[in-house]
Length: 297
Length: 297
Image 1 (cartoon, rainbow over the protein chains, first blue to last red):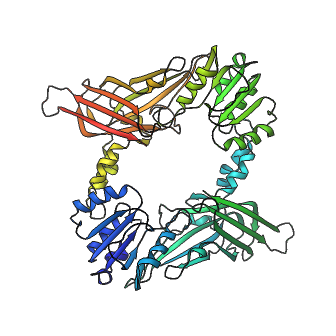
Image 2 (cartoon, rainbow over the protein chains, first blue to last red):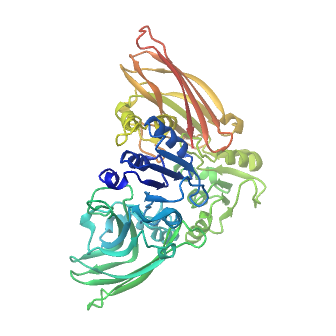
Image 3 (cartoon, each protein chain N blue to C red):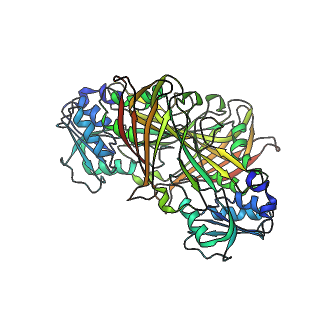
């Protein structure tokens, strides 16, 4: 809302495309900001409600809503000046509409066109999460008297979308992926990134937490927001990846990690994620390394 | 668990069928209770994990787990002595497996066989829910400056699965459906029930709340549990149906209601529900009547 409404000079008289418009809220902001015309596209039948909403708000002359796949619909304009989209999913990429935004960019965006938002960064940090890990993973040791450990592996392999308190964060955060929406290609969404996590204090690390920041760099005054543990709640929460081991870290020590992400081959909307970690310390009793496989589905 | 484990004399040496066995927890209780053999059936791939769990608990000789539809699988026994199943959905019937349990009963249960549980009752009461109704329904009056009232109708037509506090309950509860699992037919799940709700105090009624009770009458000492607002939390919570009107009721007054439920014709797992209400009072300013249509999907 702020990125659009505070930048009327950018939207004035422009043709705007809203990818995955849902109930049409961003399309209506763009129309209010002075766009010449807004095209909203969504596969869902929510678009019929969106049409009613646009009408009761008197914006039906300014906004055209089209139901269908971006790849298949007929666009009323050959090119657009601005693409707006709220495409982000959990862990930024899970069930995201980024592929569709990139298709729309390549097919419909003018050479000097703008994308709102245009930058996204995934961050990772180590967290102390002993109580919850015990509750979530240890639970399976004894379920009404039965050994349910076969489900432990399943529980460990499912990243958990949940809120993490700032005080649980043990290491400095590190970016693992930065997307420039003007340049990124669909193939870039399968990526590998080595990174180090440096402990801020003596503590334990039970899991890694990931979140993302979003930027609108085309704004007069750049606008950004974060979905991290240090800032206010968003529905994206954070994503927690439990490690097999508990790492016992001292202040200043580094955990060498790598994160590999790729869309699942059978279902492109699922993500296969691999995290490798190695705690390199002088203390042989605390050395630890491992590889964990996760599936977001 | 209690219905099975407290009734070993009933389960001893019996052949038991667990319909929709999931991770196999009820099958394992039945095996521990002395069943001769337990057959667990589930469509989901969870059954592969269930097999591992049964094995690590040393019960693989007592429990046979079969993946597939009840209607299509080959059963290792022509008849069973007891059917156990946790088939209940939200509002008892939403996405429930009752159809499958009834199929299993008719096809596989011995003449004198038992069903756990064997009785289910849906209750309805009127509730005061002004604050939350405003938050949930009134929200659409102004969404970041736009008129979103077209979504109000949608919000009103979606029953809300949520917990209701006992103090919100304004009327006596009334049963609207009782199912005897030995006798019920699939066609009975489309039903109409007229009922009266009597106000316990002067208050407002914004919605009706529904919940269900479950009984195991074959137990030595009958076991039952409720999912109502008066008792402890279950994952079924309660189901809230907002009314178009706010009813202003005085202690002792009756609201004449009827509830109609039927599976949706296009998608049998969805429910079409109609609630009619009429507040009959001497006070012409408080008279109200209406019909609300809901869809659980």
